[in-house]
Length: 100
Image (cartoon, rainbow, N blue to C red; front, top):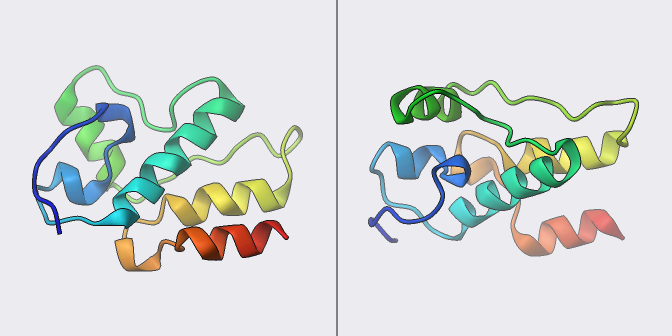
């Protein structure tokens, strides 16, 4: 379990924002943020300052991709990666199984 804070604030998981120990599931949160941004061309969480960004990431409210442009399956993958509780996020192998 790591405890240092590094990386782009837009992709930081709630556990990192809250200064809690984290593991690979924090990377899955970041992957969900990157996937969302690749589709929507904007990060899933935006704010005017770091405090607001922290609140948004930790709020539990996760935006959806445009359902007219993206499949329900892709939206589900993003939503799974952006689960507030790290234990609820899928492993990499679980994500790959969903893609088959």
